[in-house]
Image 1 (cartoon, rainbow, N blue to C red):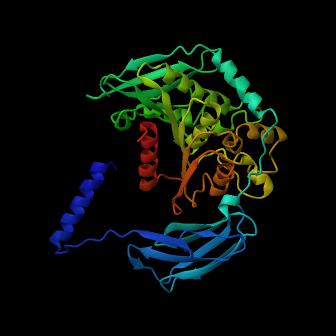
Image 2: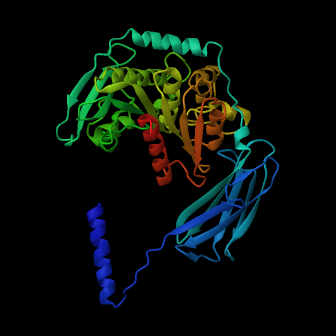
Length: 431
């Protein structure tokens, strides 16, 4: 059912209720609310945490509901399981503690009227003291310097095509592409730039995981910025959705794992170099001011932001939210690793996979950062767990700001978008 059909159904339903003399309709939403007993959900190692839980239907407490709970470090086997029946406003669950820095997650589930519901809260224990489990190979910097040198030998062969129907009175929109680190390999993107003559700062937006189309960022360009949104798969970014859906389920299915046992052939080598080449392209634009360049992205894009900023000294500012590819070897030390969790099955992981992961881990790139950065994530993130994010963040010695939205899962909350965009605009505009 499309949006118009749903709207029509609601209108008809409301009309019927009015005919019956029912003038107030409440569309309640069932949810399970879980909290830790400190407002910020942050504890010292060894301090106990008590979780509270309520099953709600809108603002109404649901009583006599069976709640099942499990408690343990993120994405690991629970250390405690149990159940209770909701009989008061806040049911309490003793969560215990951790004996080392990390995160303890309480997940509560229930079946209500035949539907399954879930809520969670994740307590942090000295998160600023989380240490990485991976380590930097001795030739890490040399490896990436050679990759950049190889890239520099490849002609950019940039192409730009104005898209009049997507442009506005103040912003031009272009489909662009340029050659990547191997002849014939290309990166595609959507570029938006102010029409008014002048010199402008630039923002490279790097994508989260997936295979899809991308749009131009007209709103940001209208504020006086050049914005390049790239895809990473070497395919045009404005094709029909059916094309991306097919590719996501065929030749690009599982791409984060492609050749992950070979540091020279791993899928993300081409991607990392493609981000550097995107900066080459931005620097070639006559309307770029030649100085103020930022990179921004979340999840997979958070990893691409960190790696690009570490590899390319032309980047002056960065915004990375819930970054992936962080401390991937965590699973080998009995704790969670970062997305894409390629080392999770410790009994099947090869030595080559472990060694390859180190060349692509944001822990190692983070230690090379020299520019100001803004970071953000939530404690309830199950895709890019906060333990993995902190393992990388704690290695950063350059100026950094961190916004925690503790309840957030793998998502952008409105306050994150507002604060991150404000930070980026302020830095690039020098205000």
